[in-house]
Length: 438
Image (tube, rainbow, N blue to C red):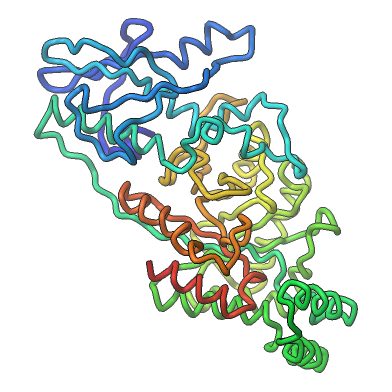
């Protein structure tokens, strides 16, 4: 991943001395300690590799390196003393870049963790990046830049492959249609909730009008369906291809509240998404993340519906409902069902770099100990209200666009998720437009 995907460099691998990596390049070499894997195998009968807090910090300028970083220093996830003598004709780094990258990209820390939140997810606060305070920086991208700066110092004529930054927009269609348009009870509940939040009765006539229109069969008045069309329209103007992730099958009636995949309204959404050049994706239901039968049934049902409509896509990916993910089973289910990419690995309650990178990468099966075909597109940010950062906040746009700027700096992927059910107010749509324009 580091050499081929992140740096675009060819390499040959051969056995060397234990407890260190040596990168031979032209007349010199680069040394790095092997800490993670050495510790892992030494503690094989115990709990595996461990990280102690607080993490030490290292300034690459002490080794004469000018790297693209988020700050003057970087946290040392796995490494050794930062006060190193530099050998003649070589560079010695205190960072175990390879072990640290494996630790973050593979989500090794989640493998044997017993910590769970109310949805059975690995909690944000349990992650090393959050506990150590570096969740807001793509630390593995920074490590790759440090490695590249060292390579350039040894081999000034070396060239790396240069990739462009991408903007990857997605919409998890949890609710294709507005429940307030489906029943009088839901309508009343929405009216009461909105009046309490806003302290005013303004907009109530619109809610009632939408309800009456939909009941007459005018489904175009449904604000959640309207939001799907609006997302396609504003992103098409920006040249963005949006992935609309659909729930194919109900696995928990209390949580999977989408309408049936073969409902005429949802079939029409799929036709429109495809016709306008956007992407249909999968949003497997609440209980699929650890249930093989539920996952295979969901994938098969979406593929059957697409075939029914004559829709063919070169790739099929998506995101787990509620970001439910267990590293020892969920990626294997995605791979077994022939899915191409997942974009579930973000923080549930804050934006940030859960995998330490803004680059797409091939995943690793920690149980089977093998590289996977399944690729990960780490989720960096959801709509601000999902992080309790309300649309009224003047910093809502800045909080999201900060990550977009970081992704551009590292020529990575800015991944933004926005649910259509959170775009039924002009204020939310204004923030969405501002983020796309940033």
